[in-house]
Length: 403
Ligand SMILES: *Cc1c(COP(=O)(O)O)cnc(C)c1O
Image (cartoon, rainbow, N blue to C red):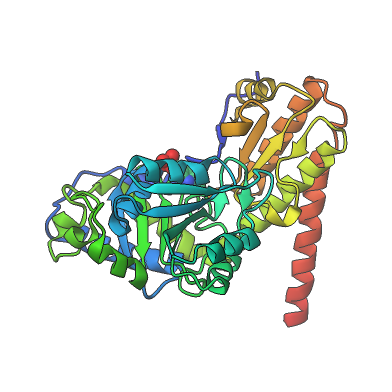
């Protein structure tokens, strides 16, 4: 009824691809062995280091989605039968553990609660118990896209150090890179990975790994190495082998444009934008929650991610709300997945998002809540605009003082 017009995609990946990125991909293929494509690879690998916050690490681009990139990471640094510790905090943390099991690794899950961030104290305690250093790697996500929790990555590094444990520290930043600070070197991360299709505004299909010196040390003897993922095989001079075959050219054209957009905006500005827009979403949800029809999945406000918000809907059937938003308003939301499937919705607010996209999504949700008869539906959008008005006014006051 109201859906015709530009669609608004608010799932937590893939995210809206900017027109400029789509346009950059719309061109004929070019040579894969010499010329501009070789330079393009070099600039991408260099700029990705900036985005990961590393000078020390080496970056690799795979034609793969996130699952492939998980496998790429593990196969390059682990050996059959070795033990990894996975910090449970949602479906994606566990999913990485499942990939590890499939590769023949011994996977231990550090129990967690999907409504809270993984607990650095529990990590420290578990590692301190492991006096024989059987655990070879700690696997965690910065943001778990199912629960929408954000983990405190520097606190986890401190926990590993406090336990005096030599395990590698591997971090999945698929749902967070480009939306919130990530400092691979400063935070002592041995390996970080991401995908193209979330904060990085590019279609799904590229995976990126940044591998630090300790990851490379482990790589030397890792017996899970296979030809396609192998870093060593990708490190020669030959451009073709950097992708272990034909480079995914058009994806690279798009990725280049997306990184240009992100770096032109500035990483700090992009983080600020995500902080403000997620604050607006959280203000609306907090308001609706007063009526009891909805509730935050993540209980502690400080642990709510700036890229995605999982909203439980005890007062109504989430599929009805999702269907209303999509079919009647043209706003596509996600449903909850994994352990909490069928209990709520997920609002993705990362990548190519701005104030009108977020207002549009919140307006559709608020209309849907009212149509479905949820108590306390009205006022959420006003809470969101009020939050932004206050935040922006505060920022302007600071700028005036500075000037
Ligand atoms: C989306 C996502 C993945 C999986 O990526 P795919 O491209 O769907 O394989 C893994 N980890 C996190 C944190 C994600 O958000």
